[in-house]
Image (tube, rainbow, N blue to C red; front, side, top):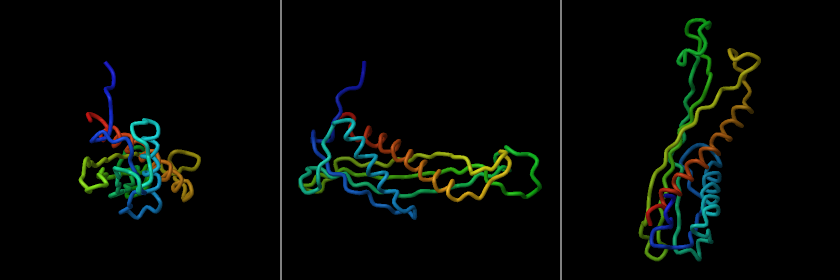
Length: 167
């Protein structure tokens, strides 16, 4: 028992991974996803990442959507002592969809394509007690960035595994 041999479709040993395209309003997120995919190939040693000009394959990626949804205390029943109609955000949910396609450079034939979706929930900024939220914008931006980076790693690991198994 164990993991069988893995490889890219067609048995190729080199791939180019240009910076993914970003169809969202989240500036710079494409870099985290591209870097995460490059790391997956470097760690697995299944294929060498080379420049586009010399690669027989090109992995094109696209960040299709990033959605943020806030969860309030009333929705989650975490806090019962709030006045009626109070909106107090206690957590945020991030949902990301990315799409990739692996193309042969010689004829642009698609050898593999897939879509990966994942989500993370993180706590809203808080002061002192878990009941009162702060308005710390830097915390929220930092938490967003950190969670998007984690999502990028997890999603690119899944995409890499899907792309390289059973070939």
